[in-house]
Image (cartoon, rainbow, N blue to C red):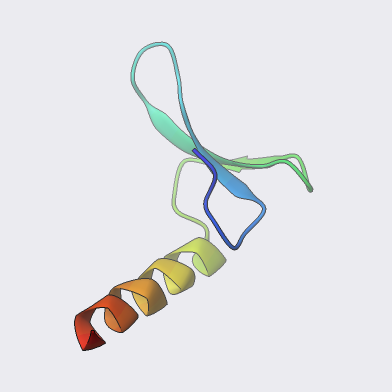
Length: 50
């Protein structure tokens, strides 16, 4: 699943574990990348204002 607004995607392994993959930099991370976390927080705050 693509993380909209970033180069990151949330990927699920065959055994159900989830990690983040950046197609542009070819980096992967088990933890949510800082820019994805910041974007999600901004989106949540915007949704609460509506």
